[in-house]
Length: 373
Figure 1 (cartoon, rainbow, N blue to C red):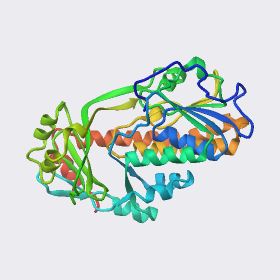
Figure 2: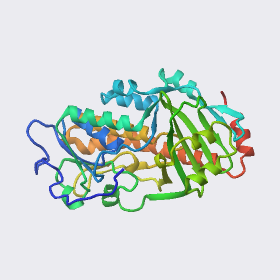
Figure 3: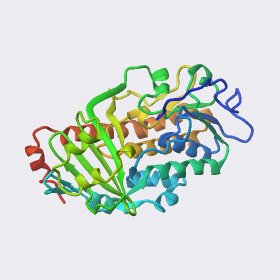
Figure 4: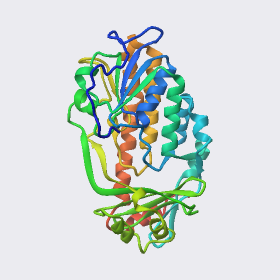
């Protein structure tokens, strides 16, 4: 996601020649955004021999956030990007979690065992700052990439400066607005999400669903617990604590013993309506969207980072297979592999949000109780 801070973007390709290539490279790309999707795309293209320039409006690398859940399919993408081992070295497996009512009664188990049995590897949880640092380090190790922090995307400077433009600049994507129009826009859900990290292990993991709100806890690393919550209308730490004061242990303790200054609060939004395409080959040059720029979703399925990684790896793989002279075919391959899959995930996450936050939960809880363990 691109944040505040911009500068004149004159010569934004940063060393990429007017023809889009320099000696010894296969092709050239400008990637807008240095989040998960942008860094992963840059790594994949560098591994394919492409010269890459990354533009990021933030003044410095983003290290905010708590934990990412990494599904086995996204782990496989990280393996193909050369990042699997470094992620597994710090990640923790997610194997035991339940859905509960506010009084603590267990309604169902999350399907983590089935995921592991089917994939042959467990879901993993990893600190978001660590993953970002690892991706940044890998990109620097590969060399040949400049990351320009504090540099905004400017259409007039970026067009025609490289073989490929990649929009990885989040839900408020400037690339999407410039090249895909304004038909698909951020849509408010009317809920506020909060995330934080408790300085102890709760030993109780999963999600608790109440009337119009929910609270989740996952492991993230030894001695720490990742937590997240959604409450309509809550705007202060006191209001959040009050909303969960009578919920089962250890939820009140988690909120009481974590410093509100470390909490992150954001409005829940998603991209709507779904884009008809993630790519364009007409106009000033080929462009592709990845991650939230293409399909920003609610966090309920915990798949935002995973879909960004899958997008990035699929795009880099298609580009590597077809080369700079075959970008139209590469973008068609990327589109065919990722758009419907990512949009199904986004739709499923939005549907789950509605299901989790119903105002009359009795029927919902009964249905959840029928789920297989």
